[in-house]
Image (cartoon, rainbow, N blue to C red):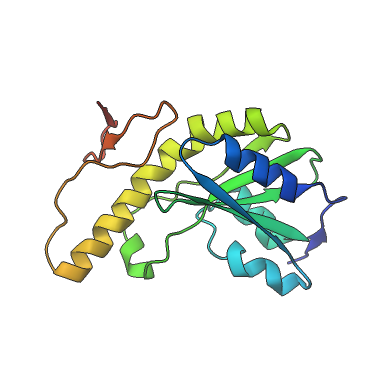
Amino acid sequence: MTTRVTDRPTDLSGFSTALAARLPSTWTSHYHQHATYRDQFALGNRVWDLGHVHWAVSEFVLRHDAELNGSHGQRLYIIERPLKPGQFLVAPLQPRNPLRHFDDVDEPNGITVPGDPARAAAAVARRLLPRYQHPLAAVRRNSATARTGQPAPSTLNTLPLAEGLPTRPSSGHAPYLR
């Protein structure tokens, strides 16, 4: 495997802070610079994506990344999009649960967003957060079941959608909107 160094770094710190401020609910941004190639894997190995973002983390030397933390326990990973200046990749980060709680839970995968924080926030809220909330809720249910030995009760999922509407976890069908 060959690793490549990304193009000129952009202001990832400023972008991630501006993105966090525009997302629904309350989000905080944490910027990280990497002194060595290995440093990028502290968060990069927690990326909940088997597509484009996973490829970028495994194939490129990333000089920095950012983590956004939502008020409902959501975590997002942000890097510059390799070979495409002015664009970013945003992906969910796995919850801090043992791997066995991820059984039968699909990867939510990340998205590419433009360098404009307002447009990026709209894309994240519309496309990424809704498809992240269902796998996150499933992992939490699996974790609760493992702790108590009984299936977790179906309760209202309070993770926000783009429109700010909560959903009920479904049985694999389209989400039920209230």
